[in-house]
Amino acid sequence: MLVADDDFANLETLSSALVAAGHRVLRAGDGGDALRILTNQRCDVVVCDDEMPVLDGAQLVTAMQATARLAGIPVIVMVDAVTPRVASLEGAQVIARPVRIPQLLALVEQLRTSGRAGAE
Image 1 (spheres, rainbow, N blue to C red):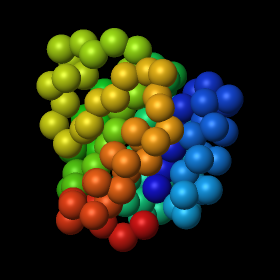
Image 2: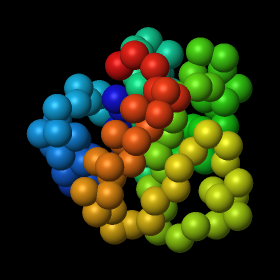
Image 3: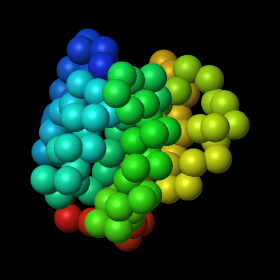
């Protein structure tokens, strides 16, 4: 699993909660780092902020959809407000901030067990 957020406190909070729930978590501080990690590591779910430098969440999803090996990885995009640009993203689940950890964990489990997620 990959968590991408340029806010270090958010990155730590989300990563710690996912690790405590038993997930192996890779971390990225921006969308460019996230894409580089995804090209070199297998991840079953991506959790990312929509507002990041280099590539924002929507741009990251678009780049993943354009890459055959990454197109099937489910993505959870965290947003302050659901905009038409974000709402129209294929292959992405959108959740509003502030993210409630139980809601995030439930969505991650749903995506992992739905058959859409590949090997971590």
